[in-house]
Length: 123
Length: 292
Image (cartoon, rainbow over all chains, first blue to last red; front, side, top):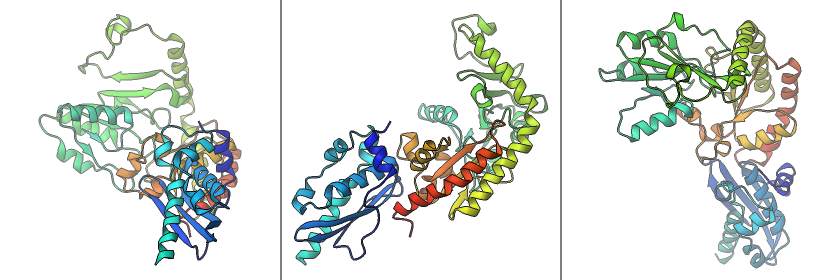
């Protein structure tokens, strides 16, 4: 059902956890549908110095969070914004059809965290 | 009339009948999964055609008082069907001691080959065949009989009857040990269903703040087989309708796991789960935003 890459990220999630005093936080999903993610970012010179997350969800949701954090870490904000759902799916060598919508929230959560940071910065 | 916690085999049929314009009453259950019998009796009317209730719930193992209900339903002249798929082979079932008109059982639940089942019909109960076009089984079910499976089902039934005592005593002890040890070792675990009135082999546990499919896959890697009431395993967005009907919160319903034990499980199996499951829950909770 899941690709080896999904299972690898699920079994050994990278960058899991919380950043205290994060520069931006993005939360998506809700407990009703069974998937919820919170992304935390630390920004320095328009670069994602650190990316962490917390995830409540299925195997796909955890793998998505892990790979998004891995892809985003060290990237500029502009580069990070190009991480979309499709990019995530491809990087994981595909996701089961029914998981593409409900569990693939990582890119959205990351984008929300960046937006949160940019909003705070312009205040 | 049926309940809110039926297996999809009955639930989906009733929902379809409902859509077609039949009046279907779905009787609720309480927080422990116990049927609201007063609601059921109050809802019986002159034009109630049939009552269909599961004898025991497939997710929680909670037993409904089918014999008592069948007596009341019979007095009102209404047909009574029970889905006894979870029950037969686990606890004694005797149709001669009840007023059940129809009873469904399934082979794979008692280690018979998959794909064989039986429908008991009390003599005199009117029915129309589900499959027509053959004289087999006296015209009650058309189609060539799957003889090998039928023989397997017969033998499995015989073995299940012989092992009934063991199922009730030894398997129940193993199930209780599993539950008690997991409750002792893992915080925020809920047992779904009335602990005093369940099948001896079933347990539904909710591990709050984690998701069932994730637990299942990590257990699977260790060779532990279970099932989950989470949305992910059912392919829908909604978690188990049984747990929702019982009012189990979403965060707990998504983290529900069902273990179904059998006479072939050993104490070593249980000890292995007790040892290996708590770290899995700990690991997943560390990832969860709900777990602080």
